[in-house]
Length: 255
Image 1 (cartoon, rainbow, N blue to C red):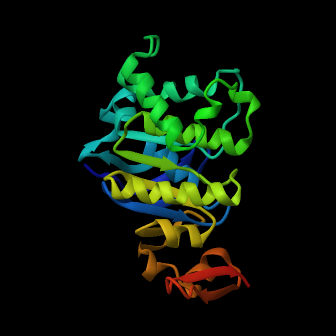
Image 2: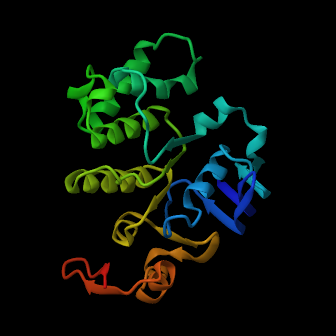
């Protein structure tokens, strides 16, 4: 099964944000989407998820139009972790994670024992089991982000789409999430994530897609795409490039 967009035009009712975009994600592959603020990254993600209709072209899942799937069917295949999440109701953390299981039941059905086992496993996986009984409104932004990651994996999806997954995390938890992304890819999930940090893409991704003002700048293997010339064109900024002595990989810093 492949998640793909073909000749996509993306945007909103009153404007087009990007056009002529072809993008695909296969199981077992990690794809990083990079670009400056306002370049269309989140709009592209929401179009691939079916949250925004394409203004042109088509999104397909498994060779079928995404629109041919019900919302519940899509949720069984694709999980979404947004960049931010406004906490309105004081559900506890375990309940938030259990919400990921509604893709496999009904919205009003009680969680089964199997659902609770899966939720507990996800809480342990992200090191937040001790928060299970805490109100979601009373935990930190970083802890909320880890909770949303746990909820997404509780869906048991084929594809995981993450918008700026490390934006609210401290340095240590950024490393944990990047390692988790790599683990997801190695276990057969297709993972698409946005980031402003090319070092995160270099560490965690197989491929990179560079998007500026709705135009694809480059798309390919990270080591071919992530170089000084491409990134300076993408961000309109000078970069300094260093080599990691242990891995030999490039490390990018603002110049």
